[in-house]
Length: 116
Image (tube, rainbow, N blue to C red; front, side):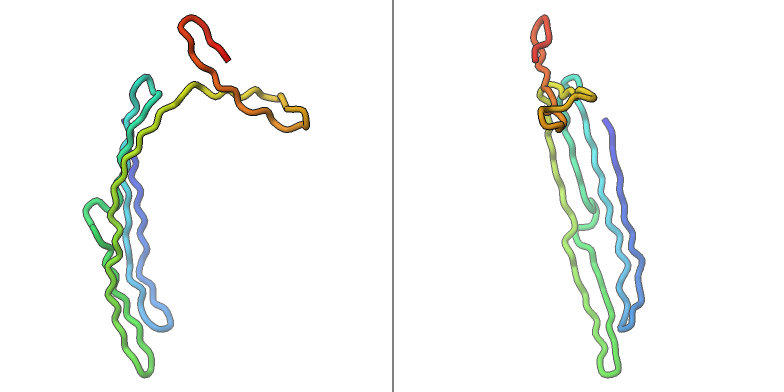
């Protein structure tokens, strides 16, 4: 089993007419391989503890002052299942008729021998 954590922080920024708020986004992923590494099950979660990203921005000028409040939905969950059928094998240096690389060969396991 292995896991992955990714986070992204964007600091607040002042611009000519106001302030853009800071934001933080994170993603957590777990994956477990089974059936002799032929299959895997993965779970992904984005912003597990925050359903919305709250953003408050302020804009102003000579004749106006504006405050914007936004709730951006950022929470998500995902499940993935993958399975490998056979094994890809690339042959180095061999090319097709026109000098283009050959397609990979998929090897299939048989009871006593390997067939192509």
